[in-house]
Image 1 (cartoon, helix red, strand yellow):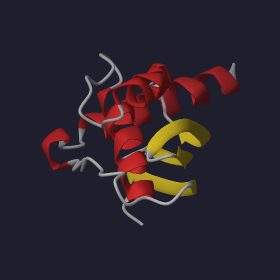
Image 2: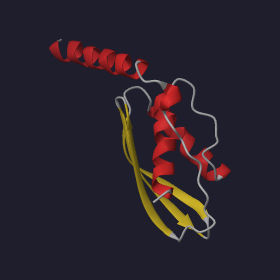
Image 3: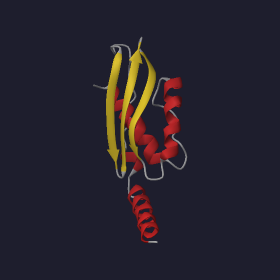
Length: 117
């Protein structure tokens, strides 16, 4: 029973922290792959309780894969569905996943961070 109470408390704290994040302050900058060399680029971002580490694979000036290394997400796991959308669009200007906005924006920010190196 103690474990259940701790788990519920942790979920409540995560939700409270996520609610305190100002979504308009999460900057996501699109990328230009025109001069991007082929390779794998690591990006990460932390926004409130959400932390993302990922690798972006670029080949022939296109994103061919995005490999999620870590996604500390609270309740935002469903935001991971945004990754194939970014690859298909070849852009960060995609819709966020409803109900997982902070995680979605943190993933997008991590991709942008990887590609601006």
